[in-house]
Length: 182
Image (cartoon, rainbow, N blue to C red; front, side, top):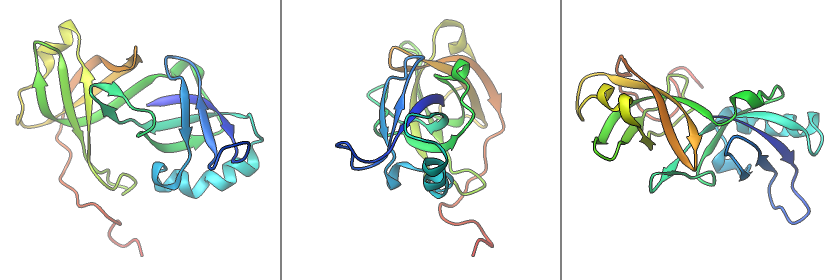
């Protein structure tokens, strides 16, 4: 998920640096704790904080998490911080996943996102998405071969699907470091 935010360093009652998200229905603060950062974001956080003063606007890629069907910013993981925010893309997302549950009448889709080939996402996770009207016909049954590439936006705290497209199923991967990485 793409977002923009303001960097706030530790201090003034904050134990950790914080990213204050703004706009496109992504209001709130995401503490930049070690466990909430991808390896790439963790590696670059100190550099980013040194390079950009307090209050600097940054772009962010979040690996969103959902709970009870709604976006959970506090559980979401920061995948990447960068110096070139694109506010027009804030609140949009794209995800490749395998269908784990599908309640067609309610339009509730649960996708499992698998670890990626670069090893930046160590464990799979599930996302709950809302699929309105026409998109519901494109969702395959649970257990079908293949995967879905889904694009959408945040709307009233939900991840609302706008496009659904069949995709090749990502290969099964083991969590942990990449082969030859050490």
